[in-house]
Image 1 (tube, one colour):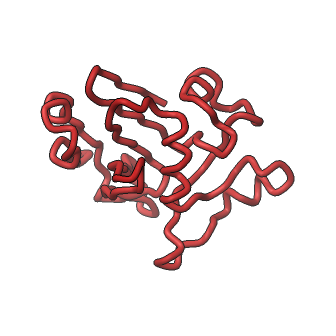
Image 2 (tube, one colour):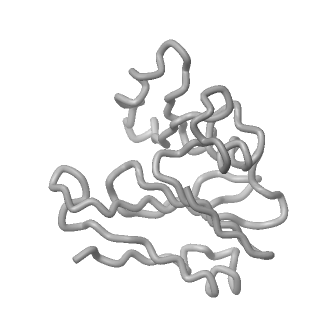
Image 3 (cartoon, helix red, strand yellow):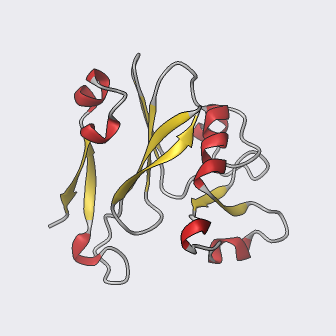
Length: 155
């Protein structure tokens, strides 16, 4: 998990998404993300296009610590823990693909960046990339974060 914070913006980067129902502040996941009663392993899914909770749930049936969230619920959770005075970008790496999307956040949108560096054929394969976030561009124009993001092919 990684954080970049300036006076204007916040970038949160993580692999599997320790953002769950019981997280109350960023420190809960920054300092002890595996504390089972404070955070969860979560994945964003889109039920409206047929995505369903995946195999991660089978590991948490008894305790509920592995769950999938739709973008609306994930935005609500992030709203609770992220600083109120600055826009944020969320960078994740769970779906094994490269794309950006807006998720609902504080009555507006937050840019979610999905990034896959794996060249494994069943994951991103030849499409494997790393994500570049140009912090100067993001700081200059925080209302258009997609302008600060690009994918660079892994060679």
